[in-house]
Structures are given as C-alpha cells and as structure tokens.
Amino acid sequence: MIHPQPPSAQGPRGAYAKTAARRREIVEVATGLFAREGYRSVTMLQVANACGVSRTGLLHHFPTKESLLEEVLHAREETDAHRLDHLDRSRIDAVTALADLVALIEHNTTIPAIINLYAVLSAEAADPTHPAHAYFVERYAGYSRALTADFERARADGTLAAGVDPARFAVELIALMDGLQVQWLLDPRIDMVGMVRGRIQSALTVPLPRA
Image (cartoon, rainbow, N blue to C red; front, top):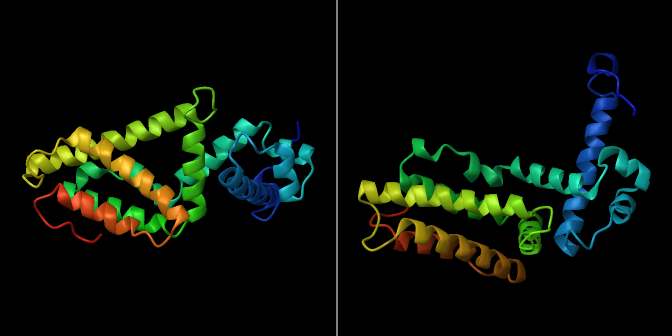
C-alpha cells in the first residue's frame, strides 16, 4: 500500500491536494454516470474511461463500486441542498421550518443532475440487495420523522388545519415531492415549487412565509 507523505512535507498543493482533487473528479463523473444509467448498469471501467484514468488507478482511490457509491452519496450529504436533514428544526417554529423546506425545493431546481441521481438510485434501491437500500430506507424514514415533528409542532402552536394528521400528511408530502421531481425532470415547466408550497399551505391556518 502506498502511503502519501504528510501535509507538512508535501504542502497544501502536494500529494494530498492532488489526491483529493482526483477523488472529487471521480465522484463528479460517477455521479453523472449513475444518474444517467443507474448504479447497476455502470461499470468501474466506464468510470475510469470517463475520468481518463486506468482501472487500476481508479481502484487505488475506490477499491469497489460500492465504496464509490458511498462517496457519491456522502458528497450529496454535504451539499446545501441537503440541509433539511441537518438543520436543528426544533429551534425554529414549525411554519418557518416548513418554509425552509420550500426553499430547499427551490434550490433543488438549480441542481437537476443531483435530483436525477436520487430519482434513479431511489428506484433501484427498492431492491433489498441494492447497496444503497439501507441508505434510502433511513433517508425516507428520517424525512418522515422530521416532517411529522414539524406538523406536530404546528398542531401544538395552533397553526395546523383541523383534520390534518401529522404523520400521514408527512408521508403524502414526501410522495408528492418525489413524484413532482420526476415530472419536473421530464418537463421543467412544471411549477414544482409552487405546487409543494400550495400543498403545505393547505395544511396550515397561517400564511407560509418565503424563507
């Protein structure tokens, strides 16, 4: 195994920086390939060729396709578009938290490649043998918990419309957002943001502010 020299010896522009840049490039290329063709259809040789490196060179950075997929998903987790999962929503009122969700949807319209990636992978990952199956199970469960908590707080604040069940509405809203994302990818004229905003507003007794 090759061990890179420490940063103090190499400097910020040394081996570590070059390795990090190469890994980012590979992840970016793999993201595009997985989004267009699906995880299972893409081979490591395809990724290597698209990156202009040998298969051996690719395996130096990512020994398996599963490890590459893991890094692709990890990179997505670090984007601003995924801030809904990491925001301490309990520190803001429910209506503001829901407005932030709409802002997230609006931001997502600027990154269609990432939206396409998740649309493709989430469909593939319905198969329990898919390496991202557990990731997406937890992802959806996490979204459901967060949104259910938001609507429960709205009910406690008196801002939830009568007859709205927080847990049920959370699941319905996630289904709406996912379905709209697929339709929007096919036809960007669809007002995905407006439709999500309208559905959330229908469950509230106060105006939904713009985040």
